[in-house]
Image (tube, rainbow, N blue to C red):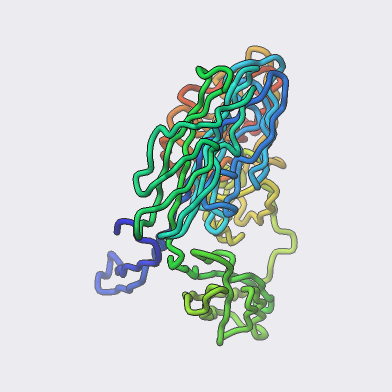
Length: 459
């Protein structure tokens, strides 16, 4: 339903084709979660001068996002270093002057499958003005205030009298000469709103820039969602976890409690099955707002205890930058579902370099072609293009672009993350910022996906 957030369920029935009367029913649990607001970042710096900042400072919800850059080399040859907390440093190429940009993705910490992407637009010039988008959050029927000029700058003094270009649609936005503002949402309104303003250089009023103030009006009485937890262990082995890690809080810290198993208030638990027990156990627990114990939700912890000894020397793989789940599965000749199941990967599209996975059923699906890594490094040479590199290494061009730029080629196909990938197919995303194949420059460090044709070796 429109604007609905929370849980929903639907019942379905599955029957054998050969025996239509042999059926069973099950519930599908559906979690509808809020989105995020990610703002375009505008940055400026002088020629041959590095600049730093934080890309998440104007994204919502505040302090609840992580950031990932799709490349460290910009189209103009600059370097862009970005941390998960949003801190970045951009260094322009020597003597470069003009516009440069780099894409990044922000994901919700509480639910990493909720993501959005935008660009950091960087002006490298000795004459510029920068108006950076602002983000404000307030509660229903509560005013918000701030100063739009706090994060704006220029090569000289900027206007102390910003101009309001587009007013708010769901409230009153009053902008003063010194850049301070007050926003009053309409009565009982909940949702997004925004305004556009403009600032100029005081000594050159033709040099101006517009920016947007994104406003999110929230209902503090929103939905708390406790999400079920699933674990799988060997018999006679304990398991530890935290039931609150994947739960969603509308506002503030959560506490956990259960009458069925030993659970700390912070959500941590350790379960040890009875000697030689094999089977499935379930426990119910309750998550509540620490600030309001009347706002709660319940969920189920399911623990599957399997029979059989663990392999003494399991095949393990350390995820490298540029790899994605389906490629790693093909690399070892196994299935992505097997990897997800063996490693309890809750969000297959959110995998990060450095993670160590157990690789089950190596060679069960196809002949493995792994020889220590599923990607190899390559430094671009003079005259190289992505097309020529893809042809030389017998790699699909879209795969090569995706692995190095986080954008699935020039067909607007875009994976969930630079380091992640949907198990079977990419997802359509209209915000791909590479309408043509990106250029490469001599010395640029690339990664080449290994496949059955190239085996990671240059032909």
